[in-house]
Amino acid sequence: MGDFLRFRDDAPHEEPAVTLDAFLGQSNATAVRLESDEDARKLIPQLGQLALIEVSFPKFRDGRGYSAGRILREAGYEGELRAAGDVLVDQIPLMRRCGFDSFAPEASVDPDALARALGRYDDVYQKAADGRSPVWALRHG
Image 1 (cartoon, rainbow, N blue to C red):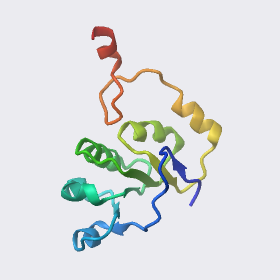
Image 2 (tube, rainbow, N blue to C red):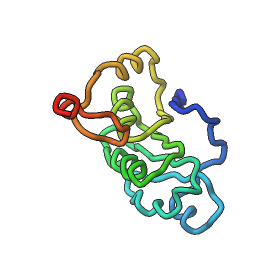
Image 3 (tube, rainbow, N blue to C red):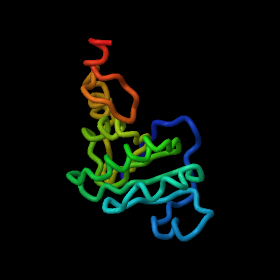
Image 4 (cartoon, rainbow, N blue to C red):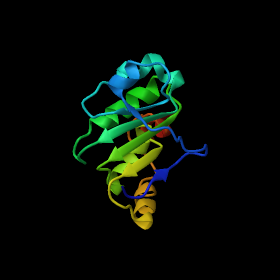
């Protein structure tokens, strides 16, 4: 695995993530891994006990994880939300808008390229889980 990127101030969660099926079948896990074809809404009743939800991105062109991140954040999840797998540097700003705050990419990430990607756009055009106001709302109150 490449670099581990984290945009949180709390300590990293040490417990390994269990599968969704294993999590739903037990009551004491605090970390779960959600595969791209699994429904994030199944976790909503137990969000309060989870410190880490790791969402799998098996291929960079598989965008289902973006939806999972936004569903979880909009449902009130406040723990660490990690994108893991085929995560590209230019996807990280968009993933952050969907609520992801840590990343475990398969390939190393160039810190300068990441800084450029994160600073590329000052304004956004739609609402998302990050709470930023869209440019149209800023213009029209």
